[in-house]
Length: 194
Ligand SMILES: [Zn+2]
Image (cartoon, rainbow, N blue to C red; front, side):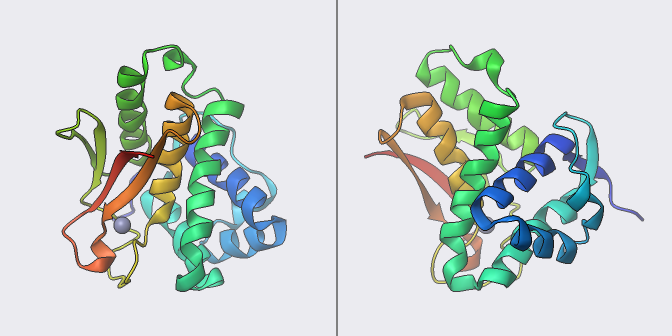
């Protein structure tokens, strides 16, 4: 059976732009080629919400980044990529203009829910502190991976942009509290006051 296309052109375009900015065009070319996305290199997808890519293709972008950089150094880069991806989506492509003026408590929940919807993974839960947490119990990046440090840092980066956009920079930090690659049952991202 062929895999269903559940990932939006917006998500792949933001990854394309983000990767280019963080790693440069040559590295982006290598990564997209290795990820089987050679068709994207010269004609990046329009940033709209048509679903034309598979989850496997999206995950491959992060997997191939880890392969290229090496597992030890990749987390900082993945975090930056995640941050830039979401920044492109929100600032350049106006994906969340409809919620930009909501009060912070509501806005951050909508942001996390948007992440869940775009990624088609995980779920949003509200913690005892009243803040949303992103629980990626079905993380594909970490499937079969082993690490001593949190591994799927692209999520932390993306959510960090959301936190900065909601509260202002330097107010909240996104922490990956649990990670399946470290042997936990889920990859769990929480907000902490700095
Ligand atoms: Zn993970």
